[in-house]
Length: 75
Image 1 (cartoon, helix red, strand yellow):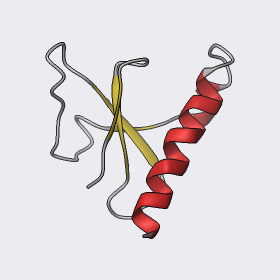
Image 2 (cartoon, rainbow, N blue to C red):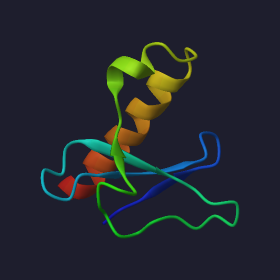
Image 3 (cartoon, one colour):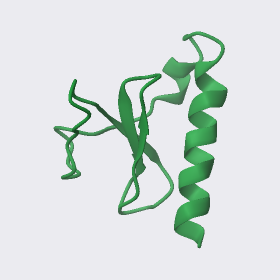
Image 4 (tube, rainbow, N blue to C red):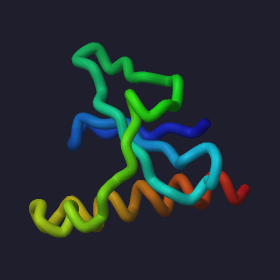
């Protein structure tokens, strides 16, 4: 699995290992560690409708992370 850490959001992002299309996230611990075992208890799908209610920078920021992950798995 490919992961992208974001200090800006305090989360780590990856794609659903089954579909390789849906963006998922998990919180990053204070020491930078995160749950590497992909399961429903530790990882959650990004709720794009909720993102619309956040600050303006978040949606393009997450779209960029999503695109980077998609490009990485396409190689």
